[in-house]
Each structure stands twice: as C-alpha cells, then as structure tokens.
Image 1 (tube, rainbow, N blue to C red):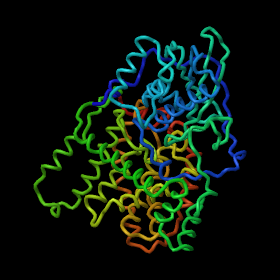
Image 2 (cartoon, rainbow, N blue to C red):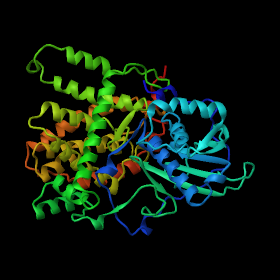
Image 3 (tube, one colour):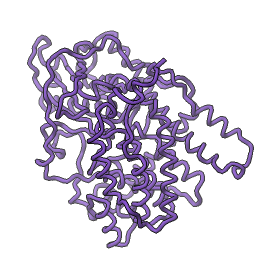
Image 4 (cartoon, rainbow, N blue to C red):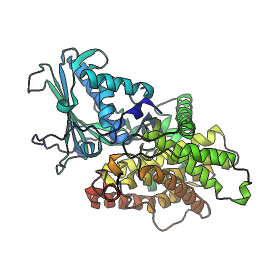
Length: 500
C-alpha cells in the first residue's frame, strides 16, 4: 500500500475557524474575451488520488502560489503561510486529503511528478516538527491548527472549492505581504480569482479556440465540422492538437496516459489491504482478479463474464485512487476508473485493436469531455456526480463508438445516452472519502458506457435528444440540486449509512 495511505483522513484537532468569513466573489467570465480550447492533455492529467478537485487542484494551486511568491521576490523572505479553505474543500477536504496535497504543494511537489511512496514520511516530518521547507528551500513554521483553517459555513455566491493563500514576512504580523485566492473547478483545473483564465500567473496554460483549424463550442458545431470536412471526430481532434504540439509529442503523450492507466489497473489488481480513512473498506480487486484468472469454464458459457472483467478494471483504478495512488484524471479522479475500464475492455475483448485505436479513443473522449467542461461542469461540488461519473460515462461511450468504427453522429448519440441515464446523479460520499459509493459507481458507469455505445452502433445516429440539450439539462439539474448532494457529505448516503 502506498505511503500516502498511511494518512487516515481525519485530524481530530483540526477544527473549523470561528473567524468571520470573507466573501469571495466568483470570477467574472465575461471579462475574459479569450475562448479557451480544452484539448486531450487538459482533460487527461496524470496525478494522484483521491480527488482531482480536492487534492490535484489544491496541489497545483500551491504550486501557482509559490510561483507568485517567486515572481514577487518574496519567496526568500516568507516566514509564515496561512491557507483558508471554504465550501466543499472545508467540508470534505480532510476525507479527500486536501490537507496533505496542500502541504506537499508547499514543499514544491507537483501531482504528476511526486513520488507517492515518500508522502507519508514527508507528512510525518512536517507534523512532528511543525516546520516545512517552502518550495523545498525556505524553512518556515507551519502548524495546521492555526495555519490551515477550515471555514465550513457556505457563503452564498462563493465557488464551492475556494482556497485562499496568505504569506507573511513577519511571523507576528496580521497583515499579509501577498494574498491569492484560487478556485478548484474540477478535473485538476484551477482559476486564480481576479485574473482572466489566460493570465500569466494562472497555473493552467490556456490554448485558444481561435487558434485551431476546427473550432467548436457545441456538439452541433462539432458535427457540422465533421460533416463539412468529411472527417471523424478523432481526426478533427488531432488536427486541432497539432496546433500546439507535434504529431510525435501527441502520440508520446497519449501513450504515456495509456501506460499510467494500465499501471494503475495492474497495481490495483495486486495490492491487497484496507483503504485509508476509517471506513475499513477492503480492496476487492485483488480477490476478483484471482477469481477471474482461475476461472476455467469457457467464456461462451457465461458471456456476461466480460462485465466481471470490466468491473475489475474500474474497481482496481478507483481503489488505487482512494489509496492516494497514481491515476489519470478522466476527467476527474472520482470518475477515473471508467475510461481505463472501457479501454481495457476494448483492448481485450474487441478485434483488431492497435495503439492507434487507443489514441483515437482518447482523442474522441477528450472532445466530448471538453463540451461538458465548456458548457456545464465536471465538478461534483458544483453539479453532483453527474458531472463526474456521468461525464466520464458519456466520454467513454462516445469514444468506444468511435474506436469501433461509428460515425460522428453515432458517437454523439452514444455520448448523449451515457449522460441521459446519469442525470441527477448526486455526490454524497460517506465521511468525505472517495470510496462509498464512488468506487462501485465507476464500475456501473463503465458498464453503462459500453451499453450506450452498443445501442448507438445499432442505430443510424438519429435520436430525439441531442447531446447539447442533455448537457444543458445536466447543468440546470446541477443548479437545482441541493448543496447537501454536491460533495458536502451532508445528505444522501453520507448521513443515512452507519460508518461502523
């Protein structure tokens, strides 16, 4: 079990602050005239578990804050750093190990490069000494009880994943030398409040839709581009990606993503034990893997045995995620098992699958995911789990359809089916942990994606509800959903299931 799993989520002395909450306004998107283009390497990020919005995003925000300190020539004079967490980050951050991610980020670690085996040792050192090396070079005092503040009261108008960093050059001063507020908007994406998304100091590099040869902001525009130029969705995606990278860079990047997904499944299938956090959830993937590999009866006696393998792949990934292992946001950590599970199904049970087939799948999945990212949300804290498992199911359904030779219109239909039957899916993790119901939900989402693809491939691409319409409905459903069901652990399974 990774060292990260040694941290058990809840720190009893880390309590919410009684300080007056600071009202943080949401960013004014209208001031940003640049329309971003979300490509395959935006939607698929290599990081660590258990949450893209609660661990990957905060770690990247800490990295961005260190950059601000360095740019302001303050890094070498900082004596204290304080972090204030609001909304879902405060309510479920400990279960999602936001505290651990922030501490690692302040050390200068990044989600895609950190050695997960070293996290436990580094964490113990900080907590025992109450000191850390800011950016790995500047020693400062850091006591979580006073320097990491949880504001659990939701402030109207505030983004549900808001964090404020304050740096002080005088340890006794109440006036910060510099402050910065970041929003973790799902999938590891962060926004620096008060700046446009293409700001120099935004940690997320923004590519512009106007730069690509085939821009689109909706599924209908996407299909029009495909019909006009007589190209498939993955071909369109590749042409757009070539604006920013060479074909070799794209191929290497896609194969690296696939390799990390495969390694995650393999590790999940052989790692036994209890998941961290206090729920005492036992890893099931190793025993299921052993059962399936020892099964001697022919597949044709039980054709649904294929689904057992799909379940296995999804469980393996999300158990690794829950333990803080290396995963790929797809498009989030909470839904990270669906696309790898469907990809493994494609590779093992479908004919004539090559490396190029895998690349087509990932390019198509990213195009579908970008539609949700642009026009709705991929954050469970904003729209519930329909924005995570629902989006991943939609991405996987459309991508599988493309990989199996479907037309752009069949791909669009499969993606629509995948989301239509996840509308209203709530995010109600027990104890704020990405375990129950999250792990099983990925297995169900993967199976649903395969079925959605099969339904679409048996049709001609004509259907009643468009993907654009279902995305709009998903967004409105998320807006209408009670905050209790949006990653706050204040409703649903989180409060109606015994934790013993």
